[in-house]
Image 1 (spheres, rainbow, N blue to C red):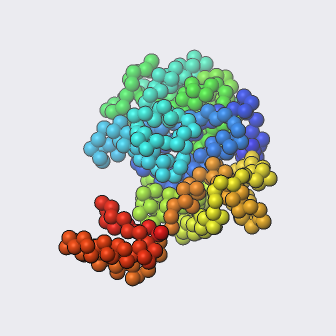
Image 2 (image 1 turned 90 degrees about the vertical axis):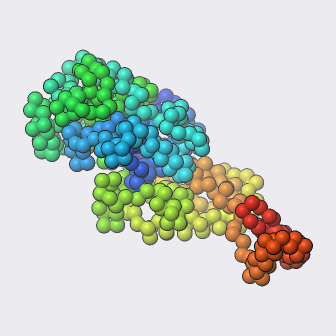
Length: 483
Ligand SMILES: [Zn+2]
């Protein structure tokens, strides 16, 4: 498998630490609102990666965090530690406790994942009845359940001399890491400009880019609702320590792949990497891989805070199948920006429906996979998840002069990775074209049944049967079946 490694700045052969096994950590959702299309993109892209590794025969150990501790990071590109706690704000808005907000939105994440065929991090189909209480059994790690691990890791970082304490917080001193800005190549002065105002919030903070490991329940945060005891006083963890602590406590001091959005590169992942070095004296992640933004047609950012949000249920209400959205997102490489619009989504819908119609024509699903094509499919996956190559391969295969049932079996095999529910879609009966005279008879039969004229109802039933349709009386009314 080759992927684009952000640190190496090139497409790189992924050599797992343990042969045949992939350990992978994915930055997951912050649960104070529903996911919008930009978040969904990341989870679809990394689900494809997860499934691709499984298809290629790897053993995958994967974790995804759920940020259910309110964190202060603001939306600016500098990731200020003194922003607003969005979980608290949402809790006040909905008249709930922050933990109830988290639970509520974890359930919406599970709903969306299920609808989009996104596997749980543990590699399973998400069960219908899975809710926020049992997500831990499926590889989702809730930050509030790992406070102890975070405190342990902060202690290590402190012992190694990377921290200092003020009245307000325990900070990571970024000047102690020599290649702190390795991801962006920025020098620290450039980075400092954006966070300068924070010095006013905490006059004891040494360098503007230093970030919070533990925030005390003090000053601006003296009434913060979620709080825990720690060696640095009562308070709550900084955002970045969550991912470092959960990834390394579950996957080990060294693991293979860390995924996230490109928006995480300059602050969140820069700080995660610094924390790992702070605790272990070496980095932990072998390959950082990032997905690009979803933007509006005018290239402006789609974000939760700007109001131009796009949620899955809204799109379903507009007549899209969740599989249209999955097809749309998987058809574009994770490294390419996606311009989102309803027209673009309609294009994907048409393409997916055309594929389903074509597959339906092939008939029998019980053929044999064609090794030449599964081999080429693997090559496309291994080539930095070349999904446009995969779609082209499907088109080519559909034109081949080979047994139709084998062509179908091969494409259904690809669907282990695409996860577009293709088999279910083609076996689902198409809506029947019912002749108007039959509709008229059905209506008549409904009326005579209401008048309890069952003799006449039976006569009409026979008449319809002679025209090739069987009438079934169901609790929801009459149903037709072609004979
Ligand atoms: Zn993270």
